[in-house]
Image 1 (tube, chains in turn yellow, cyan, brown):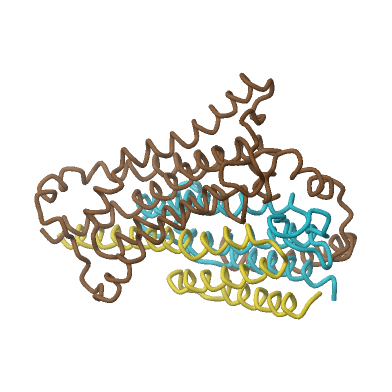
Image 2 (spheres, one colour):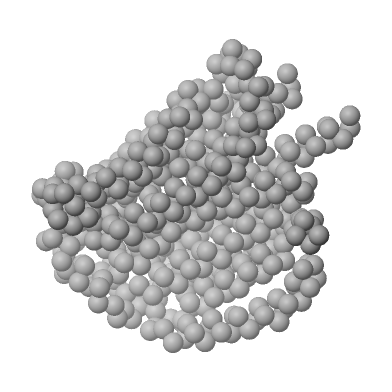
Length: 87
Length: 114
Length: 256
């Protein structure tokens, strides 16, 4: 097992643990993006370029945007609910 | 040392599962589920790896060279894109749940108990 | 089950699960020691059989094309689920949008800096070009329908980040996204029927194979790749617009 693979594995384990420990969903989305980047490096080190392409594209564009839009929608509902209870 | 990828995958699985179990916010539950899913990618790629193997693209290297297994890469590659969409479906469920119950805390979802 | 009870149960079950997994994985062959036969056969045979130089895409769209059909419909089903769940929420607010479409065509986000907007506009043609390249060159170099589809979907999103929300709605309206996704999903299945009609087996290759390394080679693979790329693009854009639509329309209704 080469040095690059060992370093990438350690980075993946660390980033995964940090992602799970973050408590605020908004911050967790960004940590998840960083986790996806470390996974991409690992997939490159394991000689899998197609998989690395797929992972980097999904974890930096796909997942954060969907999660951010969902969080935004939840916040809008909360605001609408507060406005109704004020009346 | 050669057991390390599998150990990291098992650790990620259990740690992600802890995140799912211990979260008080359903959006956080869904995002920790992503970590659990990624541990399976690691296992599959670890099984298919061949030491001193190269990527399975033969555009510029001779066909008889030592290549890494392409089958597991196919499984992981489609899996990554589809799990993103399934996560979107789960988040849509969370949004609907919030609309019905007014919170994203699973402890407040009380209809089933009544 | 309350949160403390869940955590207590996991304190017992978690380490047990970790131990079981580690013991199970210890039975696998060592990392790097590869015993599979199928991969070796594919590596040796694929170039002669289908003139494709990317083994992974060749497996995806030709040798195991039926699995990809199933996975593509998994994606389709998830997107249908998202649309069904969120569109019921949106109908309540439909009447607020009528008097907004007459407004200026550049709905700009407050707080978006000029640098963000300028760089996003520059990114849009680059993303679309990269996406088309990845989709079409699937059989030759790393790429394929799935990766290229997501990159293509990022193009209109960059338009949104650049602040041109209504321009994005004109570039990618709802009906076009639905049509795109249906075209990709149905197109893949119909290409399989072409294989049934002309070559005797569903999804079997029936186009001329060409010279390996050239763009028009590997038979049916570029077409399959394009169908999947269209579907993935339509799927991601549809999911995003379902989530984003309500958020932006509600805000404008609250301001007016």
